[in-house]
Amino acid sequence: MKKNWLKFGLIALAAVVGLILISNGLDRHAANKIPKSPSTYTIQADYNIDVSDPQAVVGSGNYVFVGKVTELTGTTYENKVPVERKDGSVEYIGSAYTQYQVQVLTNLKNELITTAPIDLAKAGGIREDKTAYDLFENDTLPQKGKTYLFIAYAQQDGSLLVTGANSNILLDDDASDTTSVAKIKTTAVYQKYTQAVAQQKKDPDTEPRVSDYDVTQQ
Image (cartoon, rainbow, N blue to C red; front, side):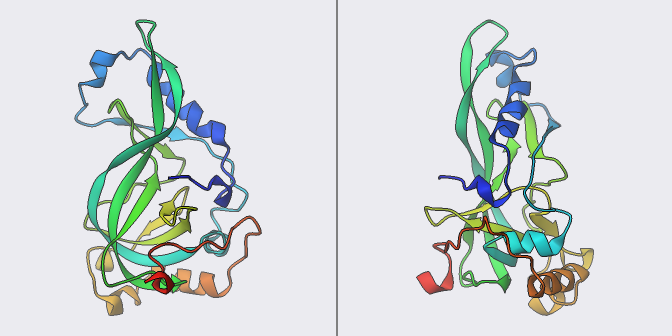
């Protein structure tokens, strides 16, 4: 899956810097011992938008929607870089992309299908050697069973990527585990981002791509 990093203007080296942390005192044998509570390391990023501004964030994304995470389907590793181990050996380690299935409940910007779960990739997750998590600063990984507002980016292959700070926002507690669209629409998060979409700030770097899950593709 080719990732379109221009959506958030991320510096590609940021992911590499995060991965270099893996080599600190680790060896291949340690990789087979998954900690009960792995540490989380921050990947620094440089954005071409203000990620604290909802109008800018939704203006940069191809899709804005509310969805419930139904499954965590695994983690893929891409853009591999060499990492030197304690014993002097070199191993190629990739950046983590956590894979989910999400049931779209309601769309705020453009239209994804709501008749079946969609596949979604989230930049970040458990390292390939399972020793720690890597996440962008001020970012969180969605959890199974929770409902979020997502800002997603269509990729060249038709898949969907969620990446960077404020790209998935947990709904208010009273709707974070519900599939009731009526209740979702009463939440502060939904109302805030509905207004943000109406007043969105267009990002000139955003390519007008269409996901395979877009209703026009069915």
